[in-house]
Image (cartoon, rainbow, N blue to C red):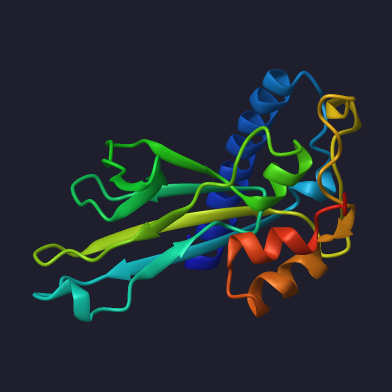
Length: 191
C-alpha cells in the first residue's frame, strides 16, 4: 500500500471514530446535530519535534485552540510535549499507549453555545527526546453554515454566536493568528 492509500484508509478510520465521538457528545447535549457537512473534511498533520538542548530556543507550537470541530491526536507513547491550559496553569497530557486525545475545537464550542469549551493547548520541545504526533482535524466544508443547536437555546441560555460560513471563520482565524478572545468576539451576537 502506498502512502496516499495509507493516509486515505487511516483518514476514513479516524472519521468513523470522530463520528462515534460526536454521537456520544450529541447524547450528552441531548440533541442529534452533527450533519455530514459539519464533519465532512478530515485533514492530517504529522509533526516531528527533534530534541533541543535548550528548548527555549526552539519554535514549537504556541498556545492556541483549533478552529475545527474536533481534533483527534495520536501521540508517541513515551514522550511528553502536549500541554493543556486549565485553571491558570499548563498541564502535561501524559501519553498513553494506543490511546487517542480528543480536543474540542472552536466550531463545537459555538454549536453547543459554550457548554463545551475549545481546548487551549500548546506543544513544548524536549531537551532529550524527539516527538512525533499525528493530528486529524475534523472540520466542516468551507461553505457549511455553522450555527447553534436550536434545542440548546432558552431564556436562561440565550444564543451567543451568530451563524456563519466556516470559510469566513477560518480566514479570520488565520488573520487573527488564532487569538481566541478576539476571534470569537467577531462571531458573537451583540447584546
